[in-house]
Image 1 (cartoon, helix red, strand yellow):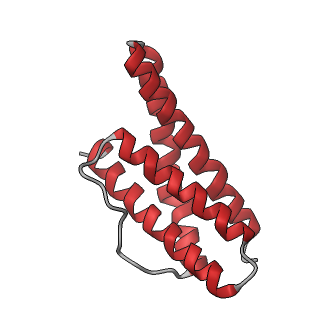
Image 2: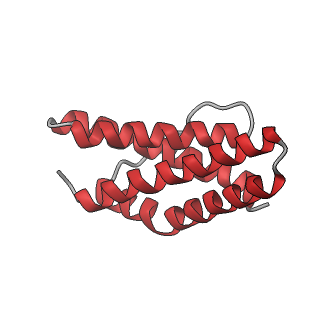
Length: 127
């Protein structure tokens, strides 16, 4: 297995970011603006860190080059949550794969999720 520490970091950070955006969405629906903003800010900080560090390390280590993204209608928090969840699920698949071809398939799916997260993040928080 390639770089278990990197894969674990990717899983932990993406799951934490997803959790924060879910908390933010629930707080928004409950009308709790303060909790919504705090949770969203924590999620944004985690994604920003992943873009600058973990995603780059993954791209270098796994060389799963693709420009594909997951299908989504328009950038919003729920689509970001969906992409973060997809990332976590596929990292779990990578961790469980014993065959190199299957591992490569999961690495490509992870890269597609990463591309989607970056695209949605940029549209929502860097404009």
